[in-house]
Length: 315
Image (cartoon, rainbow, N blue to C red; front, side, top):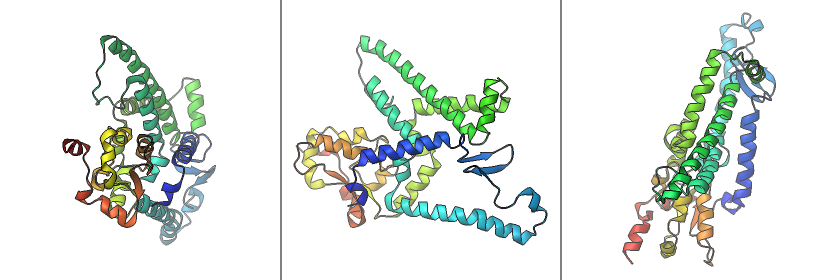
């Protein structure tokens, strides 16, 4: 059993998500991390970072010194970061997505709001409404769209702040002197993010996020990495559950399926919470768990695949 499985998941995960989300929003404004497109260099913790190749010294350096400086100040730190990140992903999977990623935090938040307003998590799920409910649903959809536009507009401003000086950006917006390129970026990015948040939240995580897909490939390459395992000996308990774990999954994955069917799993553990609730009266607790090593290998064998429909047909 993974060490993460012994932790109280939600309070810790909520804390890491909130902390990283606040960091994402504040990093450009506080000069924690951004690229200044006007000056052409990175700013990290308030310091200009030009890989040791400041323009005042550049002409005095020979080619070998420039190459050495780039390797030591840029390529080596980058390699260390990628190696450490790769090692974590190799062992735990898309842990960044489920525990840190600002986009996935928005996905979860909007999923909860949509479930509250519309009774479903995505527009692709069928749900019957009475005539009165259909009218109410229309206005709820408008409210939900307004929330998506609001979040998208904030994100657009923050993302522009990562490359354009935020303080300058705020002053130019206040004085209505924002350059045309910046206005175009804000409008287009707000539109794209609104479509993403309103329609395609988890679909972007599955098929559009290059960082997430790379993590999935690394995770899939390790047959012993942490994955959700299913206790098949307790499968009969699923007959009265109505797929609570599958319905709770933000990525809409078959939680009890083989590992290959859960390629984009974010290790958020929401399915575990759903199983905890569904099996509250079960003295043995939930029937899905985080597993590693030899238990993880078993998850990717075809025999591990489970179909609640097939189980019900056999009754």
